[in-house]
Image (tube, rainbow, N blue to C red; front, top):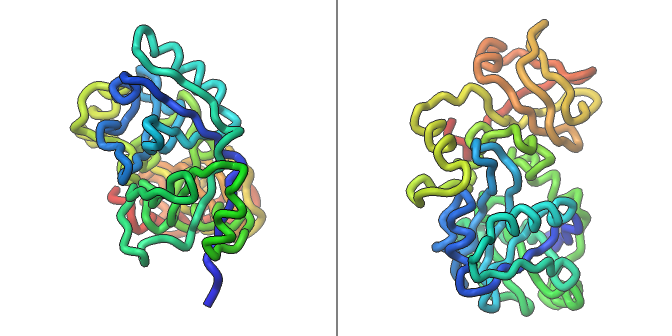
Length: 293
């Protein structure tokens, strides 16, 4: 039997939101219902422009009387700045605690454990939770950085490289923040964030809510993010994808013969199963099993 793995995610950072208004403050900003976050429940959510376009996505967990946000480390300072602009008189503090906490993936603790997406539990003086997007991604954990490796080793887990987690994500067709969604350009529904439990259509107003709801209920989605199997050299992100002579989309992230591509639905339909071309590679689009489009 293969030993279960733990995979540090050094590209992730952690923000801490505390204060009596922390929940209501965040509730009015992000795409999911923050009131549902609890000691046993984590969420996945996004912050949008007023026009409903992607800015940031992150995970939200309850820990030690505050909310912790698992965010892209390279963009955390910009996220803090954006959140601070909306704070006004709300009684909430926003603190970067990335030096105190580590974010770790536990990819082998998935559906076989009976957990549902977002199910959270205390772990190693921190919190572990089944990925709110998709249980097949396993668990994520936010734990004290100083003791993370020892805690996971004591739990019988083996250290594995971050490439293992990236390949799992791509195999499942799950986007990775700004690697796959264009900042201030992408819409959540076109990138399947609704099918990944990142939007609550019943929660009421938040920044960008009106256009997001209109896109959902008027069924005007013409493009989608697909998993693609790649035959040939992996195309760089942004490489045009063509069906014959017609450009129908662009390549996003990829690794080891699999990737994601943002494609026009009518172009995929017209291709009728024929390979698409990106650079010197041939692509075969695959709709993820979990996607409902």
